[in-house]
Length: 335
Image (cartoon, rainbow, N blue to C red; front, side, top):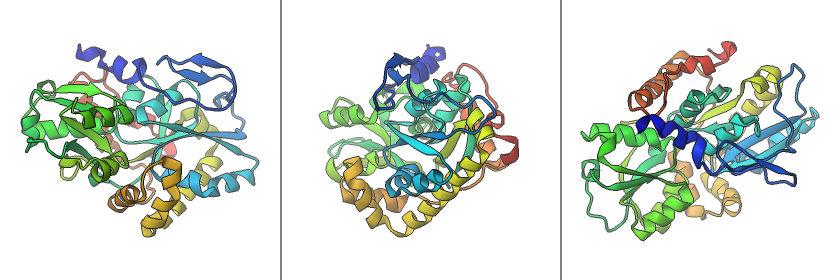
């Protein structure tokens, strides 16, 4: 049964949020609608005049969209941007797999599931480790005192997301096996509802959903990523786009670095800017901003080794159907 988990993790019921403009729609491998009028993925040597960026609710890419500087910089080059929001990394990379976006960002685990599923992705860069930005949460009145007490309990998380690895490592640390708990796969909004209703005993989640649950639902941290996982954020692209649009990719990374530097020193202003766009209160966003790390770093050998450890762990657990080499998804110039 484990061997079938990849299908359910990457190809079955992932709720892909699709390009929301007008246009006809077809079905992706997840059964979600995909905009068939979106520009086709770059497959030729010509540079693309449209950059389709997938982003999530929070993160540096979200900040970049908010300040508009990347749109301005690329407009000067004759390039327009299409922004599409996704509920999580797995959904974003599914859209990349079916050719709906060119560039996006996720945590550590989604690229591994996607690479195992044949998504033609490459790593562009990453942010420093941010282990305190994800956690296993329990309700305020829960009597659970340790991860070991999750044995036999229901634990919710987004399918194939970064927190999947956090859960695996925390269970291992507590002397439990993955099958010792009941994993309930739910996207963040549904998981939050289940968590508040008491339908699940714990919820493994990342910021800003994590901070919002602490602020409004009085959720308690059972364990976070500190001393367990790195929790890197990655910037990714389709191989064809990255190879054929190197100048554009450089501009994107440069603009990400600039907004990251500003964000580090202005958590309150950042929270106030994003709150109306994300529908999350300012205190929750400010809390999340203060505990994440900042900076755009190149992909190096040490990072590849860390990603490979995660890939090997998932393969041993039967969560991906075949062994993969992370370095195969790194462009030669960045190895």
